[in-house]
Length: 191
Ligand SMILES: Cc1cc2nc3c(=O)[nH]c(=O)nc-3n(C[C@H](O)[C@H](O)[C@H](O)COP(=O)(O)O)c2cc1C
Image 1: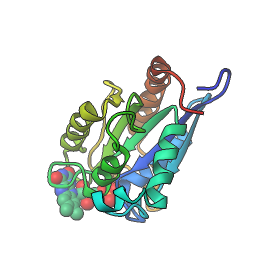
Image 2 (image 1 turned 60 degrees about the vertical axis):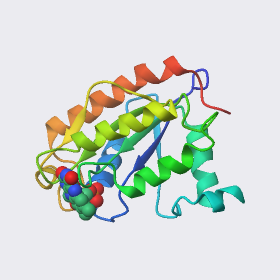
Image 3 (image 1 turned 90 degrees about the horizontal axis):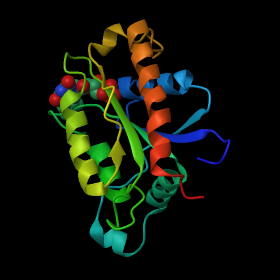
Image 4 (image 1 turned 90 degrees about the vertical axis):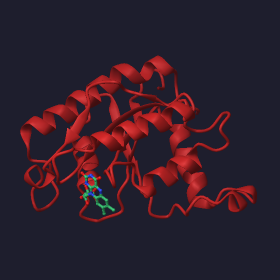
């Protein structure tokens, strides 16, 4: 974080759907960001499937942009759906690209907050745990608490995708407040 400047948070949602609850949850976080925090977003749609042969010839432009955006951020806000009790391929694929090369990757040493939404009862708890496991290898520092698991999402967003459920808005605010405290422990982003 620049001295006296805002905490720069890069928000990444692991769904490409226009009507995605997780993209909507990320928009809510932007709206609820506390004073002193700026949340920008990175759209994963242009990221190709990871291929070591492609990587050996140089990162494709969207991958280079993703890595640069992560490096320039003081912290990450990952908003994950849950697919088959795990992290959706779209998000895992982006993490795989960003984790390369493992020594000195954009993810190494980066603080991160995690949240997620599902229409069902689980609220992405299993996907979030899987993400935390991947972050052991990448040496990314996930915020430990609070956990924000948005279950029964259809009842919590209106037709325009606005998060209307007050307790959930409060949880998101608490997560962001905790990230404000957590992120500075790990030093500033690359300038
Ligand atoms: C392939 C697939 C697998 C899914 N598996 C799960 C699951 O394990 N747990 C769950 O709660 N929801 C699961 N769902 C439902 C998703 O939570 C739901 O589609 C959600 O809306 C996806 O997030 P999004 O709204 O941000 O796109 C699955 C959906 C798909 C397409």
